[in-house]
Amino acid sequence: MDATLRTDPVIERIGGFIADARLEIDDATMASAQSALIDLLGCIVVGSREEVATKAREALLVMSGDAPAFGTHDTFAPTTAAFVNAVAGHAIDFDDWEIPGNTHPSISIIPALLAATTDRPVSGREFAEAYIVGFEVIARLGEGLNFTHYDAGWHSTATFGPMGAAAAVARMWGLDATTAAHAVAIAVSRASGLTAQFGSDAKPLQGGFAAEAGLTAAMLARAGLTGKLTALQGPSGYNKLTAHGDDARLRAAFDRMGQPLSLSTYGLVFKPYPSCGYTHRIVDAALKLRDVDIAIGRIASIEIELPDFHADVLPFMDPANAREARFSLPFCAALALTRGGVTAKDFIDEAWRDPTIAHLVGLTRVAPFKPLDPGLNYDPRQPDRMHVHLDDGTTHEASVDYPLGAPQNPMSLDDIVAKFTSLTMANSDDIAALIAWPDCPNIHDLLKPWSAPK
Image (cartoon, rainbow, N blue to C red; front, side, top):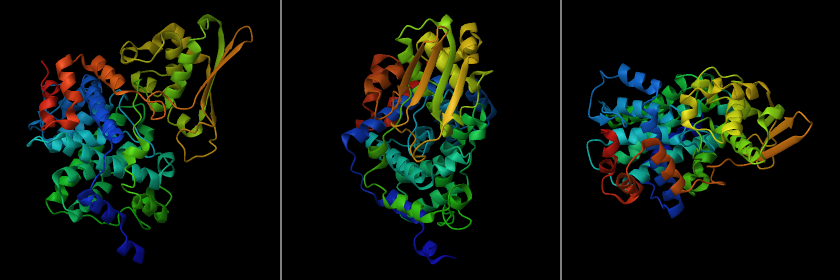
């Protein structure tokens, strides 16, 4: 074995960070974590009614226990609760995501943390620290492995999420550095998921697998089981098998752990629309064009330009169901252009069957372009563009560099709370208590209104 691997295993460093890092959490970073829990809880509650979530719960009712499935009266064993809550949270693709991991971090981390702690009170500060540690691991994996990893077809929510969730739970449980490292090492063996599954039930299921795998790995490590601390590195390690194999780059990413915190550096991308995040710049562009007051009946053609690696995960030109519609750029563009937005109700109502929307979908051509810098998810030098050509030869164009909800174009806490209220119809007292979760003595008390709804 390479001597570097014997003396410098990345997972060993991660274990030390999990156990020993003293986190300096500034107000902006805490605000991101604060919004993450509120936003995800809303996504879980509304997603719990989706077919993929209800069937997942029905299939696993035999896994009984005391951990709640939010938005329902069901309770499960902790690992199963982590799974079903994550599935619900990702069911309509309305949950947050992050750069550089290109993951939906909160569905991996938060359901695992909540399920891991149903037997004791958890303060807001404890919860925030554990969340931030889990996010740190996911983001540094993104720095170290992407976009080679994602572009190869790996669903990074499902491939980085297990390690992040294991790290978060290990921090919450106060595991020592060695045990925490083994939790992450074990999670590497459960880290799998494919972008080829996008547009199917397996996509939210893969989010559930990530949360469950992370919690399971932490439980196994706590019981004394071990993994290889070099599992991310070397000729048969995760980096080589799923990405570029440059271990020096991977080590450099983890050299930066906590310097500063990744959540401080990258923030979160919150979603105003329940569709794949790569549709959102075009949705925003369509809303700009709607302000021009274009006569829909005079549209002759629509052309959409976006990076090729974004287009690759949006393959559905003519969606046949809600799962495909959330990954259909022509549909989301037509929906925004005709109805002034993209809402959860549009998918329930099967808006792709609307003759006007279907007609516009048929007029749309997607033109992917090569990015100037493949390492940038959003490059303001190359915004997404939407061109609407009318029957008289007139063309209207709109471009968007950062979508609404990105840290560069953020949704406020008030926006997040408004989204939560629209999804849950919660009363003002419960919402006011939930907003204050970072300062509460027991976070589980604030979640009771959604763990056994009336």
